[in-house]
Image 1 (tube, rainbow, N blue to C red):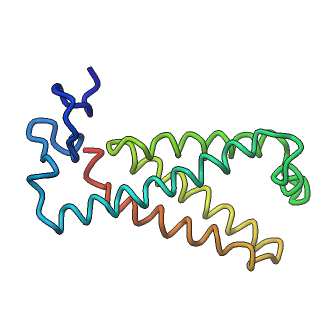
Image 2 (image 1 turned 120 degrees about the vertical axis):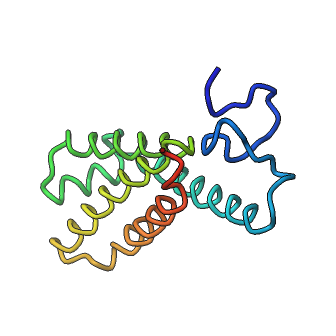
Length: 147
């Protein structure tokens, strides 16, 4: 059985943080509950955003194909970025691997901001900056889950 799923299948949070003594929702104080809710909300929003963006990079007739061609980047690079974004979205779903997904997203967003800056399109980098900040928050909130 997977380590992050409790043996009796009751809904438990923080299972991957300490598999020996999971804290059920009923045992959390308000601060812990709010932190867990905020963490999952940000994580799932980031996951949905990058799963969508990553999958769209696989199609030849989309806007990403046009953008990567205009930036002078090869087709394989667009596909590679799509693989990284999709993989990062998958990593975000599991609390233990979420920090690695957040770091992958941060690396891609730093590259995106750099690409926008090189082409004088900093007005288009607002979404990348917001994604970078949210990924940093998720990384900070999940930093101990990977241990």
